[in-house]
Image 1 (cartoon, rainbow, N blue to C red):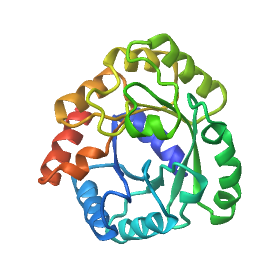
Image 2: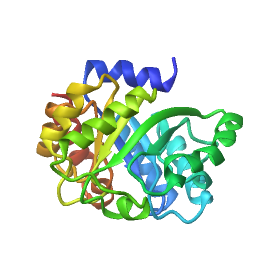
Image 3: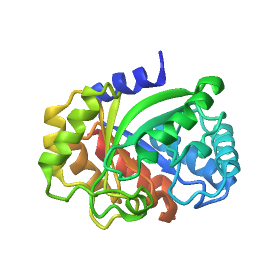
Length: 245
């Protein structure tokens, strides 16, 4: 069974939690320790990526450290072709659908596709859309942000992703966002698509995570919170329990 098939299968049974680690925010050894804690807390996968990376070596070393400390699948969440790693298990082969820059829509994918083919990591096709406020991801991605209350546009993007044959759809407000994607937007998107819906950005506590799961998120992602939290295991366990209830 592929990782894609496994994600689809598991997400039909319960809402999943993915932990996002940014190689630019901590040393590889720390990332490895955080991944171990994420696995022990019940997270289903480790995503690796960020908007401010400067070298592929950062990604390689972080992925290797995670693999040494955790048995969870490691899925790349790359901002460009140069940040791919052969040590990962899979990559979100994602198109940033609301970017003004064709590089993030398709051209980086053309550059990275041969690497994915020859490295043997699994590509997971994904439509990716950033909602306001967007934060650093929105700025770096040169995005025309979807307005917080523009549900019709969000649904349109989600349907387009599904009709283009993508395996999942990711809506996010940006790492560290003061407010996450609204419950109303999540519910409307979920109602209209039948591929897994991933929600991230601004999800800092169990209450918010539970709201997003109840609204319709198939997968809830936390990232910035992992970097900030001192009692990571307790906080993650609370968030994951809330997501799965």
